[in-house]
Image 1 (cartoon, one colour):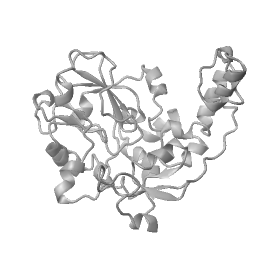
Image 2: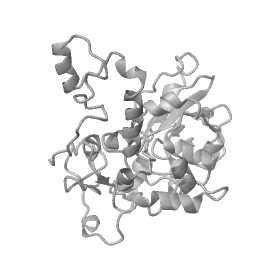
Image 3: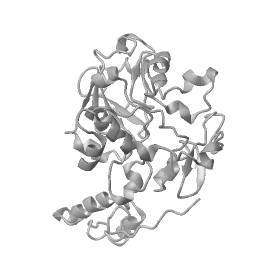
Length: 332
C-alpha cells in the first residue's frame, strides 16, 4: 500500500504520478480489436440497449460489455477495459481522492453540500450522486454540464453515445435524493441504500445526521467534482470495513497484480503474493485452531467426515486457504 501511495501521490502534485498508476487502465494505442467495437449482444439487449462490447477478457479471448465482463472478473480472469475509456479522464489530484478511489469508507455530509452550479443538494428533488465518478449534482443536466464535459466522468463511453441519449448515459445515477430523503432521518446507520452496486460504489446511511457512507468499488469512471470532494471525509480507521470490501480496486504492486489490468481484490485473491502472505500469517497464528465455518466444497467434504473441523484441518482442501493448490480458470 505504501509503494502504491508513493506512486499515486507525490506531495501536492499527485496528478503526474497518478497518471502512471492508471496506465494499466488504458488500451493499446494501436489495436484492431478496439477499432472493431459494436453493440454487445451477450445480455438482454431490450433491457440494456446500446451497450458497447468494448472490453476483452484476455484469459478467455472473448469480448463483451462492462456488464458481461463481471462474470470473468469473478472467475479470476484478466480483463482489458478497452476503448481508450480513460484517455480523456481526469486523474486524482489529492490524497483524499486517491484514498476514496482505493475503497476506504468515506463520509459525505449532505448538510452544506452543493451542486457545482451552486444549488444546495438537499433542496432539489432531482439531486443525485453518480456511482461512476462520485459527484453529487442537482440534476443529470448539471452532471452533463459540469462533470462529463470536463472529463470528470467517462461512464458514457460504454454506450453508443448519440445526442438523444446522452443525458440518459452521461452518468450512473444510483443514489437519488428523492428516494432517500423520506427515510434518511429514521434509517438505521449502516443500512445499505438499495440500487447501489458494490462494483461501482456502495452507499449506506451514515452514523451522523444527513450523512452517507460511501465505499468505492473497482469500476471507476472518473473523479468527484471539487465541490463534492470538499464535503468528503475519508475514515481510514474503519479498516475492518475496508478489508472486507472485496469489490474495491486492487492497489497491490506485487508481480502478479502488476501484470493484470485494473481489477478488484477478489479477482486476484488466489495468486496475489500480498494476499497469500497475509493468509499464511493468519493460518500460522494460534487462530488456525479455531473452528472453520467456510462453505466451500472442500470444507463441506470435511464436515461430512467430522461435524466440526479447524482451519488447520482443512488448509489443503479449503479454496480460501493459501495452501490450497489453485488451477487457472478454464476458458468459456
